[in-house]
Length: 121
Image (cartoon, rainbow, N blue to C red; front, side, top):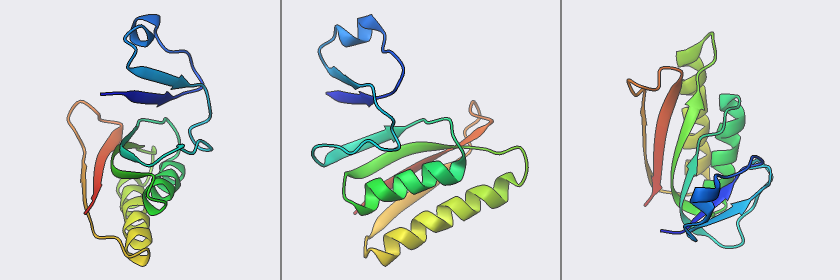
């Protein structure tokens, strides 16, 4: 597997020595891939609505066909916020004519976030 890591922060030298990781020291919210990808994995610490907008952009533009991402839970209105984010994704994909599978799970070890998976069919 070859990975393009988009992160303003540095990567561990041991990881870079593998030859399988290309580091793009850029802002993930403005990054656009040079070609469409199979997978996109996102673990950005930001507001759930902002990450939701990013996921919609990647999926609707066809930049990836499958994604795993986390929505960090706000202190208040957690369920309402997550439901709203997932509904925005569903609406955008349906309006764009995509068939998809989506799942979201509050994993035991990730008490402050929801892990989501979307596959374009």
